[in-house]
Image 1 (cartoon, helix red, strand yellow):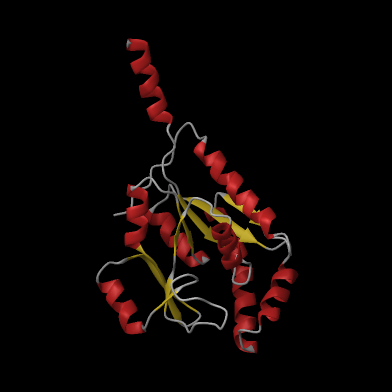
Image 2 (cartoon, one colour; image 1 turned 180 degrees about the horizontal axis):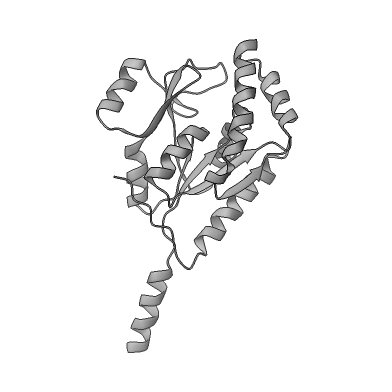
Amino acid sequence: MKQTNQKNQFLSHLSPRPLLVILSGPSGVGKDAILNRMRDLKLPFEFVTTVTTRSRRPTERDNIDYHFVSERRFQEMIENDELIEWARVYGNYYGVPKQPVKIALEHQQDVIIKVDIQGAASIKKIAPQGVFIFLVTPTLEELKDRLTQRHTESAFDLSLRIKTAEEELKQLYLFDYLVINHRDEIDRAVADIDAIIHAEKCRLVPRDILIN
């Protein structure tokens, strides 16, 4: 009986803890496409949707791709401490809602959130035990092509995003893993992310996530 109790205590210690996965990368690298594919495959994550004040693009769905809110509502969320992090990016506000993250982690559910590089840096200070994944295209030229083909930005905004991406690539040291999103090979990138999660679940010293 004593041996059984020791075994149970050992296995309990090694049981996987819920993970907080932060997916980031330059604008246009395919973060939304990756997350949508993960949803389609019904991967067992709580997908936390970013809040933003920017206008909704024709292909985007409210409360799925983003929670689209007014600036007044966003300011209320800041004042009420409803966001884990927030920032003003390209003239619009973006933030990660706190409550769904806390609830999921309390229920032992893995959480994945999408943020820009600035947001990832902020979360790193708040939850350093998160799993930080940097998503990139194979080359900077391909990233420029993808941004151009979106036809969602003016020439000025496109130039700004490309310049920003070049600077963001210098922030790789903030991240734990690098995943390359090859053109027309989205399942390959999703498989890489899934492999990272499986590896993290095998850690002898699990990550402890605390969100206040």
